[in-house]
Length: 192
Image (cartoon, rainbow, N blue to C red; front, side):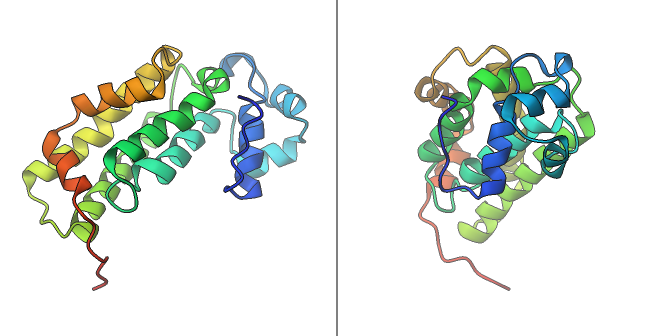
């Protein structure tokens, strides 16, 4: 899978994939210099793209979320978005399993999850034209936070199930009203 190219992504993102693929052992056991050597880049190039080696896994999760999860209800249906998300992560499983830190930056993760929750609420409000009641707000929160725990566990277990089956399990855990709301036909985005 190391030769997978994401031709639709800019060169900057291609370089980040090369850096990810330079991780060949647990992130706590590899230095930035070793990652650079493995992917044939300089340390300044590494630091142009990442603040630290611990930022690599977060970048991939954010990229997959932007390309797939956040597009659910906008340009993608639930199943397509969730399957795309898991497929992208799965395609990088060999290196992603090493990119996880045993001590993640909790405030950073919380901010990412809050951003995802807010994007789901924005989709429901601006693309589906739904009023956000307590139920929908809870479902969006559940999707962002519980969904993240599901994904992290799946990755830490070395992704034992393929994307199609993982998509099914994930979908079965999510509130049906949220999935139905996101899969409604999208109405033109309004700008107030």
